[in-house]
Length: 214
Image (cartoon, rainbow, N blue to C red; front, side, top):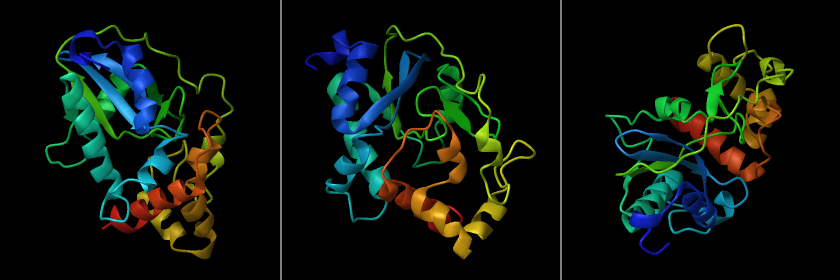
């Protein structure tokens, strides 16, 4: 991507991202262009586990900072991250404004291509406006919403906001092992969610259950 700061298009960025283990999740115009990045479903995990950050504390955030930071420098952009605050970057607002993420029946955003497995590793903030795709329809349209009944304890449902304490309490039980080892049953129930390595889901769930509740 030589001289990418001058000539890069949205398609250029989308084509380059998978080689880094990333995927472009959408974009919006705000003081230039913000291009949202997440883990590529097929390439992220093997690239991460072979990276120098693997085995050190916070490997996912450290890897994201290095890889996205280097890419931003290469193309004359500024790297933005959903971690490292406060202050926190407005990733949820950006995701909604991109037109590719939508509210789901269970609360968390759902992505047109990654369903409830969507997550953000960072963003490239370009100092200029580039052409970006039109908004996409929600994958929830016409869906039978299996996500609303997938949680064994109803922590994620369409009846009430996410009951985080109930989720953690269930994960502490033997029955919760299926979620810890294979990933959240609600996210996996979404027809738009792609499959991902069980080890990746287990790592994510361990971080959520052991670190994020502290």
